[in-house]
Amino acid sequence: MIAGIDIGGTTSKIGLVLDGRVLRQTRIPTTGHADDHAFAQALATAVRSLLADEGGGSLEAVGIGAPNANQFTGIIEMAPNLPWKHDVPLARMLQDRLNVPAVLGNDANAAALGEWRYGAGKGYDDLLVVTIGTGVGSGFIVNGSLLLGSAGNAGELGHMTLAMDGRPCTCGRKGCLEAYVSIRGMRQTYAELANDLDLLKEEGVKCIADAAHAGDRAAQRTFEETVHWLAVGLANAVAVTGPRRVVLFGGIVRSGDLLLAPLKKAFHSALLNIYQGRVDLTVSALPDDDAALLGAAALTTIPMKIRK
Image (cartoon, rainbow, N blue to C red):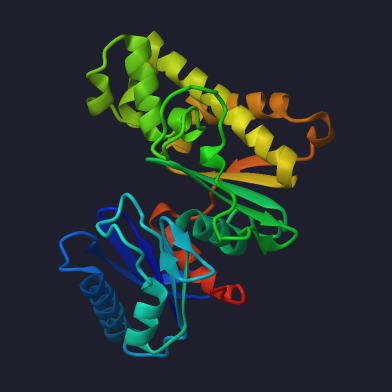
């Protein structure tokens, strides 16, 4: 069995994975611990508890998906949405506590690996997986390998600039894809189109979708603009790495006729001519509750030399 761990800003999920199935899972708060060492101990305790509930058995490795994670070093590097504002060597901390190899990777890369090993990307050695939520994460499989780059943080599609001097992004730059097609970005688009900035705090994607279905023109235009920006961003990514399949994951992609159908049309229209008819766009085939854990566990399947 492999322990898969998904570190979130408020909650962290822990699961036992065997042969592409999540046997058991639990969760603990990410916040409220005395320090990062106490958090690592809480994760290790949760893993041991799951093993006991499973009746024992052999734990082979631990895979951890986290924001701002450097897979070369096993360190979470000053993640702005986590409680610790310093580098956290979480892979080593869990390896020491559980006495098995531990691999830490970026959460978006983990999602890409999970989709590649077990989901809609299975059988595709050139793949792009895009996770749309509070932000926009992405993972690229190129020629059968996860794209990491020289520092372990390549493939940040969400921070590709699409509009010079556009909206401020959480990364500190302006006009990033994430600023327009994330949940936060959609909420801002809706507030601007409805001329009601109070909506920035109140509306989620489901509320905007419900309003669009009810005939709210501002909500409908929000989806139209989101489709436009996302299609352009995906087409640009295809021009760089040439995937055969693009997989979307996240609640927003379940909006049905409001997003996916028009997105497919806009995406194929935006593609470079040489890619027309050669790239498939689809949604994740993994259960929402299991995807992050399967992806984290899949991190342990990649042989690599740790860089200092």
